[in-house]
Length: 264
Image 1 (cartoon, one colour):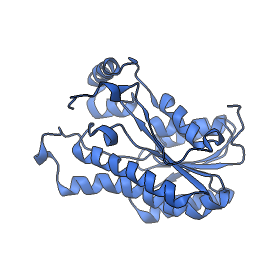
Image 2 (tube, rainbow, N blue to C red):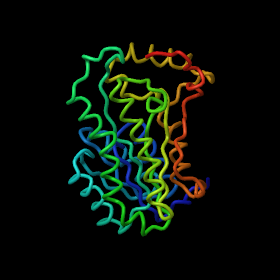
Image 3 (cartoon, one colour):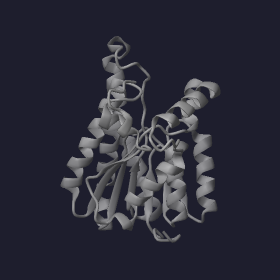
């Protein structure tokens, strides 16, 4: 797609300081969109993402906010409206989890479920609601939810995480129906994604071993990074997918084909 096809558009990308979110924000900027970069704690990384957006020739605002807070969601949307007077694209990327083996039912409690659902399900709902009027006014509003293969196959970091992503997929279907025809709502469901998040969680050596093992698990023997997943997100955000809504698309190297009897 030629650079500039999103010129004049405005995009909000939640959780866009690092990883998939940063790659999406930078990709949208290279196509001409002005960007709201949102972060919760990683301000230094968010500012670095903002610099990359400016280098791509787009305008940017950096906004701290936790999407589990409705007030923060409304403030994030207001920042975009105050800066540019419109919102055309919303990418719900912010997410959280807790690593607990699926068989360890005592490893999760109600508070864990509440926090994970607050960020992974309620947060996207609140962001969509906060951006609803300008997305409708755009006449070609696009919402892209960053889900996971966990929500399709019941795998991943914990039962709570998988359940939250399953809920996000269901919400994608519901809102795609409810918000049409002015707004399209789709979801991208990555498999394993090699980002610095795993290094922070497990340390460099173990993260490298996880990446190597995950690459061997999927039929394509590929290890995706944030930039690879961003390609699918940009497809859903742009005009080339104008005929698509209510889709949950796996971007997982074919991992779902190798999951018969799998357990994580």
